[in-house]
Length: 403
Image (tube, rainbow, N blue to C red):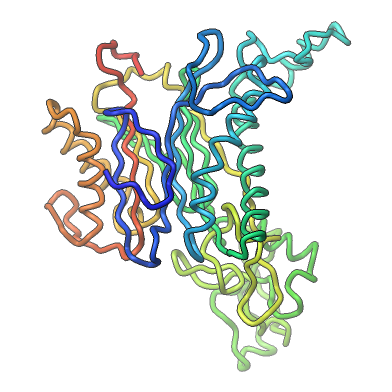
């Protein structure tokens, strides 16, 4: 197992597999990883507990895995790897009593201001998992603030995507801000556990922001989308376009302002926000500006993740059921189906290997380096840094429902 420079990584043998390859885009690996055991204690003001500690049985324990894909240097990814888990622990400690209650109470103090409070909570459909989702969202925002302050103080720049998995109370929470991906692979199922956030997938949100605050474009960009960048010869012609309120397309007569550089340009992996950034969510990038301008990208970026909840307790788990988390360097060259074939083939043939999950992570990375083993039939090469977690959901010695 290779641990990138300056990465905080806590290891429980055989709990998961990890593999990382540096594509040498920078001196340090722009991909960073972190994992550990979460100990959630009752929040007491003025007391700062260590994150890794012996956990009293009456409080919650869980596990945490995270991948950070940096851009513009490794600084933001390193900070995130060393910071986000602490932010998450603090956020979970503020809601831990609500997590342990049969139903999250209106007042953590137990005070009953209104006798109908439990009914109001129930009508809103608020469950314990909603408190975990809120804690993850708040932790990402807190971590983003910390990164902004630290990078400004040190004169550094950069940003990173963040993909986090948290196992807590029989559920797996997958939080994603960026273009990394997590999938569940079972014998007869592939389930995508995250969505990628790019300028294309968040086109309407980004366009609407430019519509509400046109000054963000400084008169240099057009918020409208066209099938291609318009040319002078298109002036006066009626061409296809769409705006923030449109899923479909329409036609408009081309005006001079439409010839400006598009707010979102390119397609697929080549799509860029303001001609600069390939992702629309992540941490950092507080100082990022369009080349040779003072136009900031941060107002268009979200640090808040989308959270998917997998109810592990409801799955009839088998030994070969795993979650694969990886940065975009893997998914650039391997599809979900190709990864699933590699997972099933390898685990079936290596049941007795105590290090099979770590070895599987290496196999997945091996298949991004143009070394086709016949399982994918492609032999494509990823020139990006590649990081992979393989997380087994089934625990040895437990029945089909164990995790």
